[in-house]
Image 1: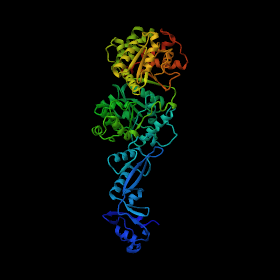
Image 2: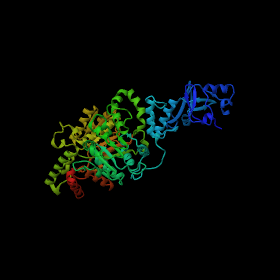
Image 3: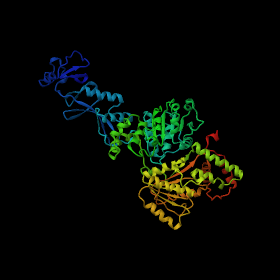
Image 4: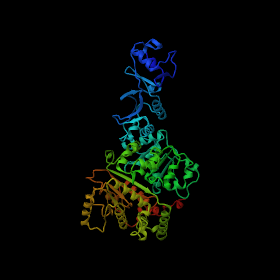
Length: 634
């Protein structure tokens, strides 16, 4: 039978043991009396129960601690320990509640103040001894350990994989019309797990691994149906891409693009949608409107846009009411550790303290990064292409639709109307060249490409972001454009902005000089770019030093584009090749893309003549009637 000393609760007051909850009519003896009774074997005297016979009594209390230990499978484990004069003992939760414990035939009082502190921490977090189940509680306890609480964290100096917290499962996301790769399923389950806890996280997979699809899967199936309403914030040029990707992969979700001069000013008009997609600039301008809704989740695409904690857009984004925040970026650190603080402060507000204390505690250095990593690693899921290459096809195609801003759209529409007025139904593919030039860069139309700042155009800014991420990985890229002036603009920008090698291969470079240019490109360690005309670089060249291809503007002929992509995607290439296709939505480029898809479906890759034929007529009329302007589409 359990000893009366185990059945009752005791409190230590000096050397006196006082019964917290009465146990019959037993008089509570002092430690000295118990000790003397045991030594002299007078267990039945002074009203003491016979069950204490043979017990030793410690004059020193156990100091309890909550411990986080490492396990073989990577899942951290909680345990409660008590320390007394250098010896460590395992404790149970009931020991803390009772206030004493009998271990190895010795009765120990438990230090009441420390015991209460551990108990309060466990109750506040809902934690019990055993494997860690809740990431939110784990982070709370880790933070308590870092601030000097009653916690011994054996994992404090190492990163804990975020996947360690994901419950084992073989389920797939409901409502998603796509087959996810194993690492994408893991990403979806991780996002679902975070959202189920009302927590947030940073999805930082490398470019080409399908971050957008993983987020759409979480929006479609977070365990209890869609997360309605959810808000996606992205650069303005990517809004149309998000809408089309959601409609493609999760067509049951009702999506609204909240952008442009005709957008609503009523919160009720937004809350009826499953997903609202808007831009960082609109969040600043419409902050009071968007803040009238408590969003199930707010997703930040290209989350490095809030890396400056003092910027207006950052403050506006963090002001939004939300149950959880998810950040998506392939470049979580661009300049300094404060970039990470700002993003983490969005996904898990307050976790890393305020910005000033963070900068004081984590110096912008290698040591500071090493100190920070264990704290944030459970909240960041980052996979590299090389790590999951076995799951991937040898070629990853990423068509990305970009949206012109209103001023750019107005200039495009003016040129579109001019062409229609001049040619009408007699227009040819050649007549559309000026529209294609505009979609490459507006400066190509006015002859100012030598002096114009290329970053004034939204499509070029997206190219810059892609190149930056590729160079951060010390990898190489082939960029195809059919416009000579555009090739020069791109090459000049790579050299001036990134300080990297950029060669140009087009009709101006003699054939015998092309292979030496490729050899030089391949010999460079780290990031480098080759800018090629698809006709000059589309056949006969082997450029496997690059595992990234960017088609800056689409070609009328699918065979030309496919041959260009094959320069990097061929025998000898050891990594999956990522092929980016940048397309401006609701312009001639959108029509060209539709045409390419149709021709590929028909397996018709014949060279198309420059004059408009019967099969081209519909494409030409479509290109001249499609407008990127919101006002034109009203």
